[in-house]
Image (cartoon, rainbow, N blue to C red; front, side, top):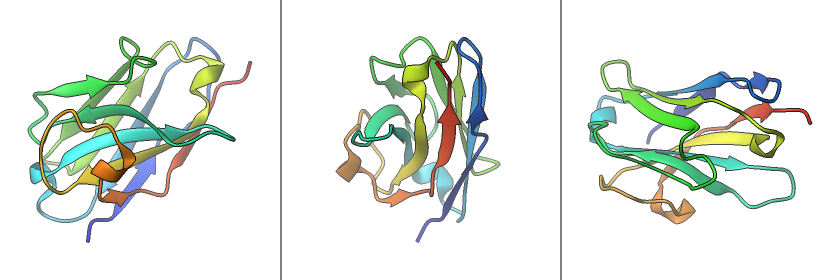
Amino acid sequence: QVQLVESGGGLVQAGGSLRLSCAASGRTFSTYTMGWFRQAPGREREFAAGISRAGGITWYADSVKGRFTISRDNAKNTLYLQMNSLTPEDTAVYYCAVRINAGQRYSRIYDYDYWGQGTQVTVPS
């Protein structure tokens, strides 16, 4: 069982930045592939970014590529998402997720095994 707790969400003006964090329990964090997903009101949950277990490989949805950066600190059991140039279309609840079986380029909801409770990001129009 892996427990994930997101933080860092909030209200930010268009063009601004936020950094989300996701703290994970357990001693095997460095063996997991990790991802960030988001869910806007009335829409399905969608993939935003993923990162390999050592952090050397990252992949992004086209909608966030060039603006968001996923990273991890395995010594701190923490995953991050740096979000820049935010727009109202980025308004959503953001979730971090764990894939127990490591690998790369996973972007589907069912590729991931454990989820956090989410943190709200709001960018008013």
